[in-house]
Image (tube, rainbow over all chains, first blue to last red; front, side, top):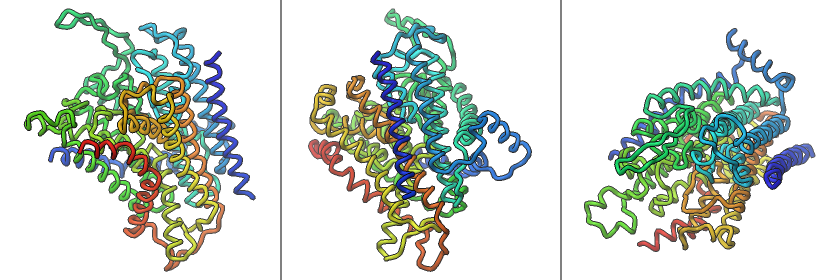
Length: 30
Length: 560
């Protein structure tokens, strides 16, 4: 069970990075 | 004298090899036109990529594709490692790996770091080593080369930066695999094991039974070095006699460590069409690299404090602690490798960094703090691009002109993104080290107290943030706090310094080119080189000197 949480933690980190990419793109377009 | 000779042959020889390699890498990664064979290869890559490979991508699409593919790499490798006890190629019946260690290991290899909180021969099956870790060593390195190619296309003024899925295949099949095949063959000829058979029992002269681990070491070792990965097949990494048997495998390994990072600079110069600019950048990297090698060799000539009372004849050899004498001169090979491996985000070790004299140990840390003296494959030049943006900005401010880089104006937006990139590296290292230095998360794992203990914690976060992966060691770092904290730092600081530079390149590519005038700062000559060098040293010193003063410098002064 704990191992699945670590997998989710890794995927959540990638989700944060994608969100950062989108945020920078939006900021550049403003 | 032999240290100078070894440095000249390894660094100088590889610099010479990097010139034709850079030309080849440009052909591989950014071929415009090409003959029928090349066109055939491109059609094959497009067929493999399917619909994903059909369209050109802007910086954001390229970055998202890169992140998505790397997330898939993470999940696939995680799956292999979780299930290794049920899967084939496990002749020594390796069992399950603990969850936080899997997270740390997969984050480490996905991010091209290869920080290892485990011993490969103890914890991993051959399937995990080959199809999880070695596969990641190829694709993570290819990701770095692809990102640099995209960045260079943007700086060359192209609004479309290429296609990540095509670039990934170009880097894997045209750059990394052919070179790895040649080097792996040479390594196997140099007495390195290459077998899928399990460990063998052996009886020592004292009659003791030992189990000798072996495996497909030559293949693993080669991409470990070429891709600036650094993760060892065996726990002791390149000090292990099967992973680095002789002086010649040691020399070939050092060449492989710096070859593609050096070639990446020339590839960048060729794609942006500014070879003289690339030469200036290459020169600045070389000055910094030689400075660190010189410092490391110099400080390692003295014995450690514990050996200083031994007879003078014992002290002539310098600091022998933690060195493998089969690699030649102890104060040559160990410190030289130590600097090369930390300047290039490789992280493999052929000596114990924890046993280096305090100021020698500072040199690898400087390499990882700057992270751009050739750096990781592809990403080292991307890191240097950030320093270039800041240097151009500072130079522009000094003479009162709008800064320009490659005929594009560098304005507030680009500078803010560049500062943010530099800031994240320092933030992860210094905040991480501070938190672990004052809590049981770090303190309970130390084997040394005082400045040396602080150096061990500082080095671990430095290695994680720089995606280097070498260990100062002396830490009991296979704990949940260490595994989670360094795992997160490795992932975040792998991709933030790729995403933000790509955004800068995209922003510059969208601008109208400016005409070159007499007031434009040339990015080719000595003036630019000195400006860039000063910027790097200034940023590095302002960010990291206080931490260095608390660790290696304080330890050095204590023993004076």
